[in-house]
Image 1 (spheres, rainbow, N blue to C red):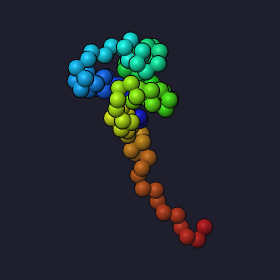
Image 2 (image 1 turned 120 degrees about the horizontal axis):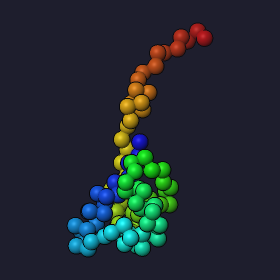
Image 3 (image 1 turned 90 degrees about the horizontal axis):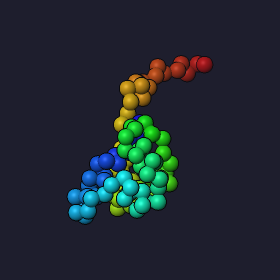
Image 4 (image 1 turned 30 degrees about the vertical axis):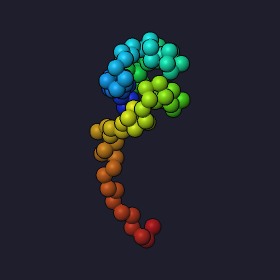
Length: 90
């Protein structure tokens, strides 16, 4: 699962710049709807676009790897189990 670390990056922006950044302020800086930002911040499974991620990275002055993180889900990690080898005589 891809996780958007929006709240963490807003906090990092505030610490770095000394400026408080609300969802409304981030919406203005990024050109995104406030509802989109609120959804990303509150729902871990919100499906967003790369264009949205790009706008957030620009507004928060961060990189893609700062904003998103891959976390395997239990069903994904079990699918990586080794499959039995096929017989070469098939």
